[in-house]
Length: 163
Image (cartoon, rainbow, N blue to C red; front, side, top):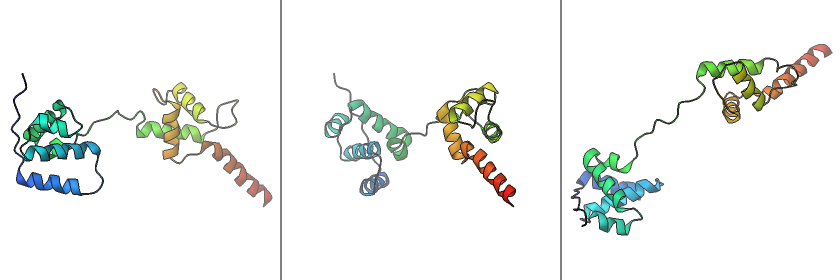
């Protein structure tokens, strides 16, 4: 037995916004498909008919209709913001890692490497966990180049000796 059709009435101002969105520049594909589905609803089509015209399932079409009815046009077109994962390093931990990198490398190492920074920051309990990529991105954001700092200090020292 087929589901009963969802009566969706698109408000005229919303229909104008949908048309503007479809005529405007680059949009996400999912937003365009949702706008097209709402436009089909405004023309009196039912969810199964809309699903035949668009590459969306009946369920997806029904969800668009329900979101429009309960939350309006923005809720139907756009996804809610997602919280995402919390950053591993807060500002204080970033500063500790940076201070460690600016100091001399551990005994037996000529310079800091990303792998060495990751291992040492965990060993020294500056951070609970951190992978090489996290440390690489951190150093890149802070524009820290630990492998060059020792060289730069040596160049300054040579300049002073030559005077």
